[in-house]
Length: 147
Image (cartoon, rainbow, N blue to C red; front, top):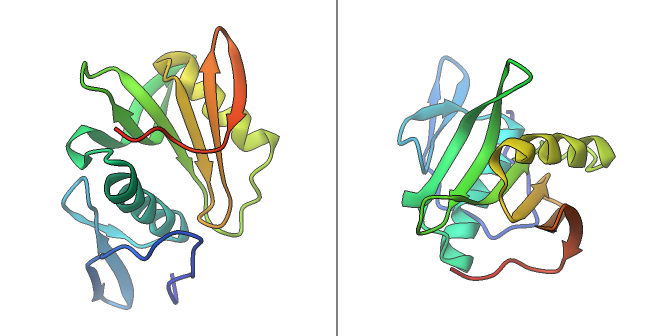
């Protein structure tokens, strides 16, 4: 990623590193250096935002959480677990230039078929959409519930 992109999220305190003309970010969850892509930039800002604004503790977040779907390995961008360690919020991050459309919603709903989280969030760092899943229905909501 050439230059950090301005997002529609509070600025996160991230540690960036440069090596061989490649920028890395220290992941707030995995605690290791990750190549800084536009999608990773969005993911790290969302992690910070969920933790600092909604009390979604980083200790109960998983990043690139592996799940099997039709014998294929998939990775959920962020999964936040409740106090009983059940999936509570599933987050799908896209790069800022990616349009949040029915394909992105279909992707997160497909992942959620395995996780059964009651809340879904899709974001490209500019636009953010939150959904509540209840009785098999997916309804848009305005905000997340603080933890």
